[in-house]
Image 1 (spheres, rainbow, N blue to C red):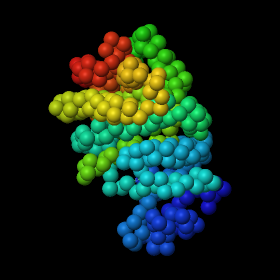
Image 2: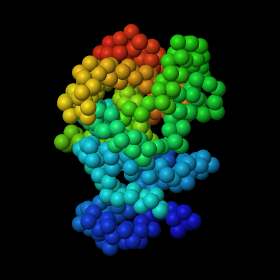
Image 3: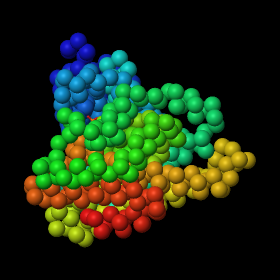
Image 4: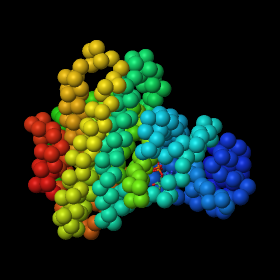
Length: 396
Ligand code: ADP
Ligand code: MG
Ligand code: MG
Ligand code: MG
């Protein structure tokens, strides 16, 4: 093993043998396969199976970005992922992978093998929508947001959890990549020449820049609920059988504005719709643009259903709920806009758009940029997902 005990296919069996607490999930002496499947930018992921047909996943962080060894990144991100996963699975085990254990010395999570699921973005790119996933994610966000908010916890419980889940390094990445770099000249940015004018127009929009600045400020100041923090369609597993939906890869988890998780899903549905439209799949684009409405409705229903359990009904009256929901809805739209824009201009692009041919790509990118601007600005008039979906449909 190297100086930081980096796992490899050959060292995984020995490692598992040294972790007897995992023996209820896997027989380390009777392994049949160890496969490295990491496809993300950051970490190592191994799927391990034994003779009895049981399996688990090991996920280890490296001291740098997996795809760029010159970009150092704190290994504490694994600790953040384990903490977030433990909290969210306590609240909503149905919608996250089960956490089997965490090794804080070598930064290794052991978790449920979900290889009978498929990544939602991969499915969307192949034209399979899995529409049930939107409502499931609305329930997931509703449950985790309510139970980690000041409505679901007492004051001291919430303040302790805020302190225990600080994630400064990963949050800084979001602050830079989502809220700053797309709006300045930065080496991370790249668009096709056909989109240069679209980017120039966007950066000349003073109203947009003000709203993005305020959104960044809100991201930095709010500690409304404990978020997944990076809930794009590549962080969601779906399985048609049983309509199972799991949010994974929660290393960006932190206490922030509830609308940020909703906005992440919303943005990626807009991006998927732009892809469908570019491919001439208009019906599918329309279906995809309807899903943010399903996401919101299911979130709202869940949140309202939990309201009777709130911590302090003496002052948290129903008018407080209405104001809180209106704020989250408006936040969701502005964060959706910001997240859509960053996937076109900035670092870490979306394969939905990148895998199109060049001419389709220019048109789809333009549509996403315009839809992102509309989400940010039109919500100031009417933040209902229905109204914003109609608006987005006219653009895409
Ligand atoms: P990263 O932080 O590097 O993006 P992810 O958690 O997104 O890592 O995992 C990368 C890939 O590994 C996923 O896209 C998926 O294909 C696979 N993977 C991750 N977790 C699991 C799991 N619990 N079960 C099966 N496959 C998984
Ligand atoms: Mg990932
Ligand atoms: Mg990732
Ligand atoms: Mg990740």
